[in-house]
Amino acid sequence: MGNFLKNKKIILGITGSIAAYKIYELIKLLKDAEADIFPVMTEKATYFVTPLSIEISCGNKVLIDMFEEPLSHIELAKKADIFLVAPATANLINKYASGIADDLLTTTLLAFKGHVIIAPAMNWRMYQSPQVQKSIEYLKNLGVKFVGPEEGLLACGEEGAGRLASINKIFESVVSAITEKDLEKEHIIITAGPTRQYIDTIRFITNKSSGKMGYALAKIAKRKGAYVTLISGPSTIEPPEVDRFIRVETTSEMLNQVMGNINKATTLLMAAAPLDFEPKKIFKTKIEKKSIKSIPLKLCPDILIEVSKLKKKPFTVGFAAEAGLNTERAKIKLREKSLDMIILNDIMQKDRGMESDTNEVLIIYRKGNKFFEEKTPLMSKEEIASIILSKIREIKLGK
Ligand SMILES: Cc1cc2nc3c(=O)[nH]c(=O)nc-3n(C[C@H](O)[C@H](O)[C@H](O)COP(=O)(O)O)c2cc1C
Image (cartoon, rainbow, N blue to C red):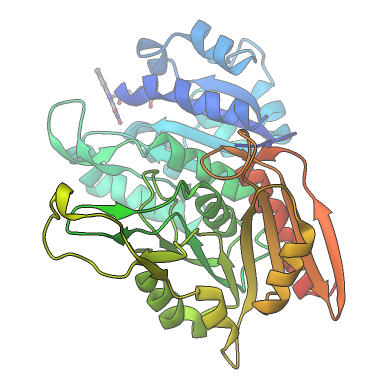
């Protein structure tokens, strides 16, 4: 997480859809990101969720009636950064497209001049109707952003396109709308997670890497407008939405994917923890317990060494997991592997490094022969990712 919406004012429009109950989860995410939320409900929305609980969850007065505070629609429209309608009914979408302003929500929406994000939710028959499709097309042309709907089982028991987009996707579209697109010209390859090296058909060795740091980098790079290729080992967490997601299992597969895509990249972030060694021999069947005395190992290919041999290589960032923040070892690695930057993680503490949601890293980079070091505070991996990406941009632009 992180305070990515600090000082941002969001009008949250809620309409009369069965999906309205899901909005509490979204409110929590927005509040965790420190947004100031101003809820506006249609009268029909109050059949689905109570104004009292929405007001308490948002921490600001809920507005429904246009005449309760007569100029609230203009005041709200003037002060907000983002107007999010979630869930948005077919009725609301058609009214907004036609410029109808017959309640507080539609009137404020019409007066609002900032980013509008709409998350539709309805039965697939309503969604497929030419009226709704025409309204969505028209609003998209005006610059309104739509998130979802998704395909799946609908509240009425039918299957089809009409489900409210996932709460994470809606949240991401809000944060993305206010994030400066300062990596728009970048194609970033990010590796994430562990790799596996097989012993026999069902057994393998691996490590504790969760993929969280790499996934956070991919999410934030995407938010900042980069084209992102994410090459991931077997992580169990949900990958973020990126332009290309490539799943690999072994270190050799990761190496092949990095080398196969690197010529298009402007930056390579090696946040994965590929295994350094693998069994010398992979048994073709499940080995008998008694038949094994030891498992001889050999070194796996070193992806960063292979990258360093390239004549033309992108801005390359390595990640080092060390016991303690040993800067001398990190600097040697930086030189040996011809890196532009290295991110040092301390794996000896519980609330940072592998598996943890938070991290504290030392960013080491060089300009010519001079080394520079910057330590981040202990913060979420998304905040760390944001700092790393801003630093890369700064170095690349020579500022
Ligand atoms: C149980 C129930 C569920 C409904 N769910 C939806 C829905 O998910 N999407 C939708 O567009 N309309 C839905 N409707 C219809 C809307 O509530 C109706 O069109 C209403 O006029 C919308 O008003 P509003 O847009 O001002 O909130 C539902 C109606 C009922 C009775």
